[in-house]
Every structure is written in structure tokens, then in C-alpha cells.
Length: 129
Image (cartoon, rainbow, N blue to C red; front, side):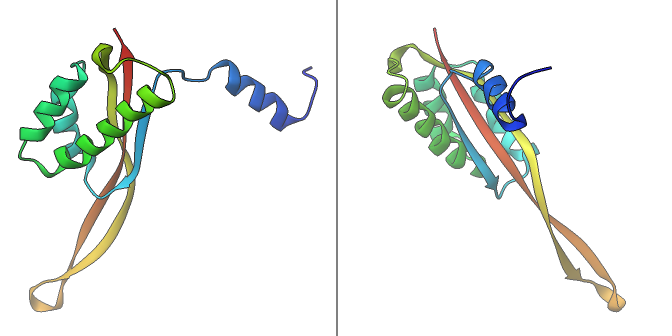
């Protein structure tokens, strides 16, 4: 049996499997995962400068949100990890489902339809080539 308190054991286990790649995460983004994934699919695996150019000229709403997130991940890589910007590329990017706000839309004959305003948690992970 392992020595130490449960929280100490868990902390030690998490230190072993700690992610060293620079990343940025946006929680509770007011955009559905489907709409975010259309934009994320276009930048996955690309060089960061190419990805920023794609996001800059993409007309979708999610591209502005993801562009800000990618710039944050690049800043994390340069300042925290000391990596060179020219060698960075988008290793992983994904959108997980967040909570859904339920709203009511009045309809004809006293009925009410439900509107679901979806949220997502968007993550961008960079790596060095």
C-alpha cells in the first residue's frame, strides 16, 4: 500500500503525468462545439503563423475567439517555456461540451419552445517542430 495521504499520492501521480507542452484553454465560451470545431479543424497541424492568417480571414464568429486563444498559447510558449515562435505548430485543438443555458421562446396558441444556448470549453495545445 502507498505511503502518505490520499491527496499527496494524487499530487505525486499528477506530477508524473504533467503536460509539458504549452497550451491555452477557454472555458465557458458562448459558442457551440460544432461551430467551434469547423474553425479548429482548419488550423489543426498548421504552423502558428499560418494558423493566425487562416483565423484572421475566416468569416466565422468562432475564428475571432480562437485567434485570441491561439495568441495566448503562443505567448505562454514564449514566456513560460522559452520556445521559439518560428518552430511552433498547433499540435492539438479541440472543443469540449460545456453547460447549456435553457431559455423559453413563446409560440402560437400558448405553447412554449425551448431554446438551448450551448457553451463549450476550447483548448489549443502547441508543440515545437
